[in-house]
Length: 392
Ligand code: ZN
Image (cartoon, rainbow, N blue to C red; front, side):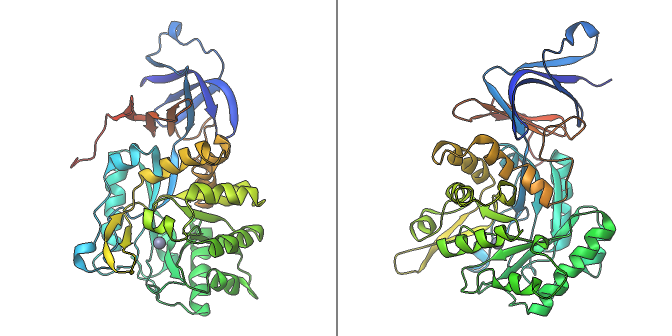
């Protein structure tokens, strides 16, 4: 029998606070959560970790990462690089969804799918959206429904861009068809069939989604809009969307320029949402890792591009706790169990008996990363990667 890992006396957030517990897992299964397990005399091969002074949370679930890179909006030299394994593991991210963005010509779905498989082999749990900003959607097997049914890793479609100058400007009928195709594909394949929606800074904000649902059998829950902390007006619109049953996502990667020009940090957006009475299950955080983040000077000229980082998700978790006093359980929920639920991944995002052994150990207090286990395998130990990607 493979070795058991036994974490003793760790403060558990499952993500709800569970107090001091022992956690036992073997390979990719959580076998037991309880108190004072005595496994040393059983003769089993047990790797014991002293959890005192540590916090255990579920591995973070990042619903939007440009794993093969994205960008390119400033020409060929502004295409962003691929994500490497340790960029996720050192952020406490054990599950992620890969997506295309503006460019669906030099960035392709076969390349996205191949990279998702590579990251899975390297240790993460990975999924993909079919499609991109471009509408009608390019797909792999002939349609959105087909891709959901025929490709294990495809759990939805996106990023479908609205209210953005880079968008294909989908019509109402096109938005409805995309959502309906995803819904049917999701039902038939037992997946979420979610529509990830990139929301730009355009005046219409979330109105295309309200309009798409109006007068049809579709619901707002079919759509999963992101970048909703882009400005205060959009944030207020997001709260309205959430109060009507939708889930809202805040983007953690940002630049000093954007924050100085109206963007609300994801951590602050989460704090404001909860303060506004938005249901805590309705809020999620994602990194937008490896997206391009344009930097402008005061005259609005493009100076260069920064690259979105998966690590921003972990930074936002810390910022929400330390600067905005959001309870740790609610912050972790926004980065684990909530996205897992929206993405239709019931075995992810929670630390419970029988679920996947994806967990993060943090130092109490400063929330420094101590260890990361993905599918039961240790990827990070004492804050350092013990597993690296093939080309790292
Ligand atoms: Zn986007």
